[in-house]
Image 1 (cartoon, rainbow, N blue to C red):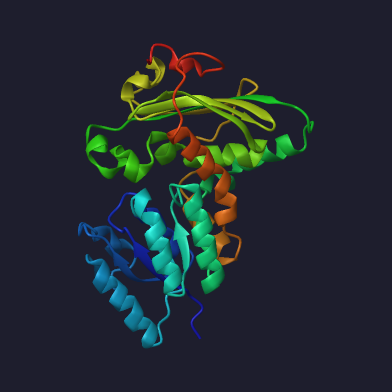
Image 2: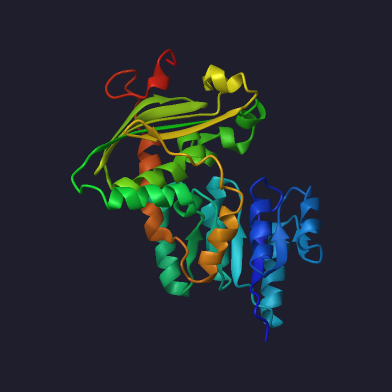
Length: 317
């Protein structure tokens, strides 16, 4: 009897897909078939050279169905496609009797979660979201510290994340707010998930800046006041970081103390897969808060530089 699980993967040509290929291999499982309309997928050779590959959704769909009829059931479908396609591809997985493993954000709108939960109930399958920050040792340690601290304490938190992107970003689907959800959704949703996981529900959500390249605002959580700044603009990176030749800046401070979590990301997808295979994946219910948070940010009118704003907002509007 086979002890491995059979995987399909949609969006295999994308950047993040290699982490999923590695995670499938690291956990001793098998990639049966993958799909992408782009055919620059030579990286598959390093992991599953014998797996089938398709550039057309219809042929991939037919192949998965044929395998099922011949006795090879797909257990999981990993989804690494553009954000706006996640909902459709999750439905594909569930309809084929597989559990889904989906990159963040699981969907763009809160009501999409309700619909998917209904399909979960109909099919008996599960949607798992990759929320890797919940598995990062430094973040787990921070949550433990907060959980063991005073229950009524309100912490002051600053989140800064600047990950430089070139002109291509705005030509690609990532630059289209209808496809990516905008910069706060695309690069920030797992940070908002992490913050609500640690500090509790959102009580107030104010947006100071919202442009195609950056967003900033203030979140009042049950146990924290959070000033946040997210950007893909190289010009927003602090000078001392630029002088080191670096194009990314990531910082979280709690009560003025830096939380060191710059390292340790490499194997978090494999760790996520280990937990999912044990039945401990993060499901749709756990994604609701962060999806609602970024949806509200996306549909808010920025108030400008006033109120409790992040210091990086100065001179940005």
